[in-house]
Image 1 (cartoon, rainbow, N blue to C red):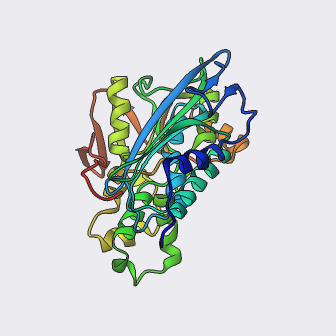
Image 2: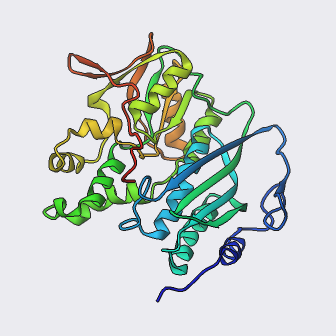
Amino acid sequence: MQEEWSELDLIRLFSGRTGAPDAKGLIKGIGDDCAIFDTPEDRSWLATTDILVENIHFDRSWHPPHLLGRKSIAVNLSDIAAMGGTPHYALVSIAVSEQLDKDWIEKWSAGAAEILEEFGCTIIGGDTVKGPALTINIVILGSGAKDRIIRRSTAAEGENIYVSGELGSAAAGLEICRAPVLFQSTAEDALQPLINKHLNPTPRVLLGQVLAASKMVGAMQDISDGIATDLAHICSQSGVGAELDADLLPGAEILGRVSQIINKEPVDLKISGGEDYELVFTVKKGRDEDLLRLLRENCGEQVYRVGRTVKGCDVRLISGEDAVNIGFKGFQHRGSGS
């Protein structure tokens, strides 16, 4: 028999996971009609929000509640990372169906609290209700130095394009979670990193901050819908085109095997799979070597050059002598899956 819960139970649960009471700038968190916090000097506020709906953005049958709690926060932290910012506060709202028991909710909230603590972010409020379907809405408030915030609209023609990690792993992980029977002949150890990438992504907050501080980056965005779509946003906002070299797109070695099983090309997963939550960014002309040296010496990060910005407005994939327009051909929410 599942343990019953009430909205008051949820409020008490989240109130107990608010993080350090001395969070920088926080005057009053949970307890009043509004939270109160100071505006950091010489910084601008950053605000982002995402809604996750059961059976549209996630599937509880194979997404453990603890990892879903982490991912609920991670997708928002990734937006802060994309602008080179620092996360500070979180507003957590959740509509919970009668089908969920108290144990599931506690595990989900523990995962959310865990990743918030890892990135120094404090819960300062939110809302809890009962609803027909599990729906999660997270708001993250962060800040960035006014002269260092990186936007989508500031790329220039002739800049090299980089990504912060392998592409297509999360999309492959989603396929494995949806139909594990298809992959029974493949070693579980080889598949697990792909599954982890989908279930428990790591937002690149620290790397985003280093890139912003360098002042060598033209424009930047996180890769949530696939590089084909997310790079197209940069190009549209900046008034430039882009060429991606198919041979330069980084991917896990096991991606080829997964692609073969699901009858897709590895490059398709890399450019349009979605939910990698890596960063795609351009580097100002003539600053590539300086930036790569900075990353090696300061944080040991490896990034991958995948193309360059060009005149025009299209995002094209170059493969040998072929060039195909791939702009805005990434992941789209269609009402099922994750």
